[in-house]
Length: 154
Image 1: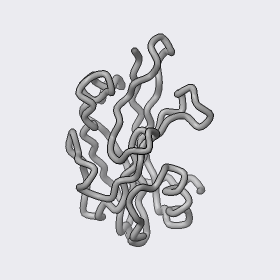
Image 2: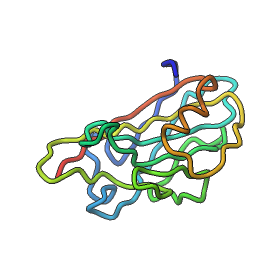
Image 3: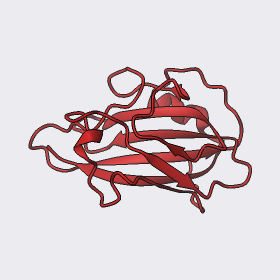
């Protein structure tokens, strides 16, 4: 999948300072953070969103959230977004929905990449895709992508 940058932007008021609040972490309330995006390119039909921690001590890091089939007119997800509002993929535990940051104690600061992908057609993807399967499915259909990064440490 090639990198396609443009005017698409994503942000979160929860971690505008960079640090993800405990309420959005696995050792807190485990609520997904509020996210907003703007600047979708012309031709966007739907969005996909993922949250991934490349610092997790696993071969491919850890996937915290996979959600797709988000309609083009959607520009935000509220805090605590339920997995049934759109099409839910599975996180690194194999379960649908958001799993907040929960790095090993003393492992240092981890980075959580929230990626939004603007897609050029409705892909009709079934629920339960892993991050890897989602990437395979959207390859060739990404108009633009953007990210916001939050950090968390225990």
